Figure: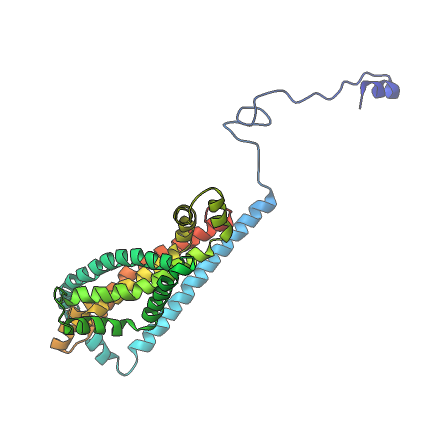
Length: 320
């Protein structure tokens, strides 16, 4: 209401409404800023009730999940323990005495498995990337190279790993080639590299082909050669996209290093086999299996974390 309106109505002067006092912005004191950086925002009662409801649902879901898990574990335990052959099974597979005497030899053999994982993993990553690049070469002049790379991948992806190890461990020494080793560890590692290079090559090739052709075309338009476009534009994007499946292949490689024991290499599995064959008790096999599981689970969870992180970044529009 203006001053003129007030005079027309009652002949009295009515002052205009006062303006809010000027003061610092949101960070300072005043009606708009409050104290200590408070912007004056107060959540509504509906939002507070909604957040309280969400917390209640989370607690209820956690309680239900815990109770159902405990009930399921209890039912399985009662079913196994009350089975007719449980006592004999416990003595054969879960004997504490044989678990103690087999733990040290199994851990000593596990060191061989870890070394095989480190060496074979590095070789497989490099060889797999090279094989994938050979399969993606363009031009008719590279057809023989592409054909050989495709035949290699198809053959070793279809050949069972255990047969590949048997052929390498027992077949290569039978040739009596000069300078070729007869060490079952080296020959078993060679078989692992042959098989897993084929799998990793397909993973890398899938990542390369997932990059849109416009990326390569844009790189070529800027003056980069085919090799430079592959190195600086295509490969960085492809490798980031295939990190989760590569980690899955490394997890599988970690487990399959135990197969070198069929050639006589004393790893964790063969150490367990020696004790089991001597004492006719299979507890060492259980201990070796649990150790492999204890190593594999952190690698699997790390793979899941990497995959989830990349999915979040992709969904938010960040770098893939």
